[in-house]
Image 1: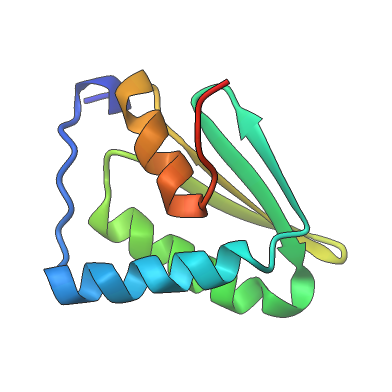
Image 2: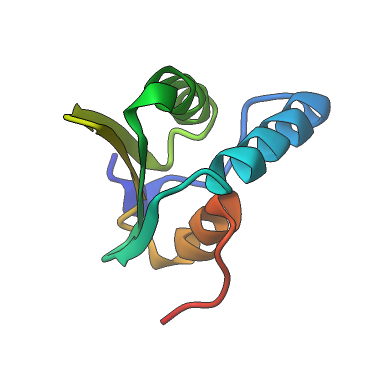
Length: 103
């Protein structure tokens, strides 16, 4: 099944979802860069918070299987990419990382 065919369904409880949304908001404030990609968003962070970025990304990937969430550590930065083949998921991705409006 591709991302285009997957229904949006979060598998965590409402209280956990709220707590995770707060984590995303706090993480977004630490982004060095944010860029829109075809189908999503990429952000970079200082490598000193790589563990936090990777932990939150892994938890989000577990509960939101309809998204492609990857992290990579290179030198002094960690890059986070959140994408989906389904254009209907883009507003959700942008809300998750704290950016609004499509381009």
